[in-house]
Image (cartoon, rainbow, N blue to C red; front, side, top):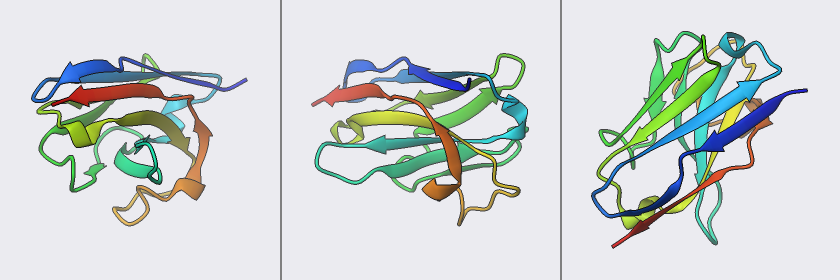
Amino acid sequence: QVQVVESGGGLVQAGGSLRLSCRTSGLTFDNYIMGWFRQAPGKEREGVSCISWSGGSTYYADSVKGRFTISRDNDKHTLYLQMSSLKPEDTAMYYCAASAAPALYSTTCFQERDYKYWGQGTQVTVSS
């Protein structure tokens, strides 16, 4: 049984930092492209960042580029998202997802139909 569990969310002031974690089990972690998505109230879910199997390739949404860093530890089957210089507009539920797509390109990074396994999300709230 595959499990994807996010943690690390919380309430932080604007300008602060948070580190999200996503632990997986039941899948061969390094066979999957991993991604972070988020959904703010009243808005559609959007892609935040994704990372290739070895971590050698990463992509970011323009809105978080330079502030967020995605990484993975294949030995621990865990995905991370280091978020810095947080803004109120970063407030959202953050989801981790695993994709079995055979290749990763900037144009496919946020293609939700490729992501087979999803977590339940962790809430990030940034106060102004």
